[in-house]
Image (cartoon, rainbow, N blue to C red; front, side):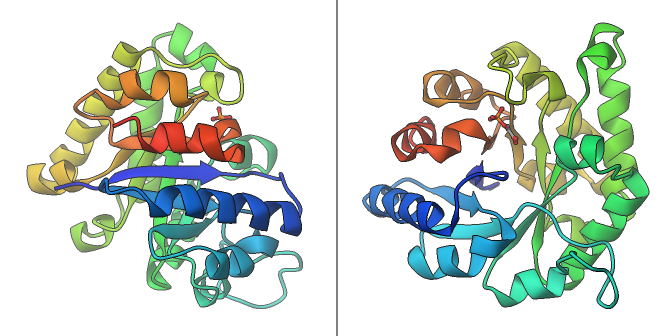
Length: 250
Ligand code: PEP
């Protein structure tokens, strides 16, 4: 049975004190829940250690990125091994903002995915098309190529630790959510793509999250789809009550 997941990507928001306050507030709300949803917080690197200490066992912690190199003279970078040593369990890799603003190519992302796995971190691997690609009907090809180039070099055993997050770039931070049908159509395609490579059993166990202007008011409809296993949440993850509304939307 694949895991239902709601992950909050804080991006470059909240200083350490504000972040800890938010993490503790979310932890308090989540500790009373009896559902089977895995909750993940992805604060900035500077906060990970403290956030991990501040939350209970119901919440896992993720980085928002990791370096593409093992260690050494890479000023400003944070390695997968360093992230793992904080107690984090996940690493978001390939977010569209990293691809777009920091030139992260498929080849770089594959290196990051491999390093994350080698260090015991589970990659939350992001894929998704820009508006122009959707409007010209290329969205399935784009997403397939991101998956093939980013994670299909992995063995099936390695791939079992990967979470996929479909985030149409035109929906991220825009308030424009993919419709429930658009999300299901793409998630089904992604699962079929995984099944063709690794077999149906692996595909059935793969969590595929939706991301892009997901909030408490639309999460229920999105999560009701058979192939949508949860969400990667940006803006709405910065408000504890709103984030809780998404976690309880299944
Ligand atoms: C994201 O950045 O992963 C995201 C989905 O952002 P938002 O929810 O703000 O659209």
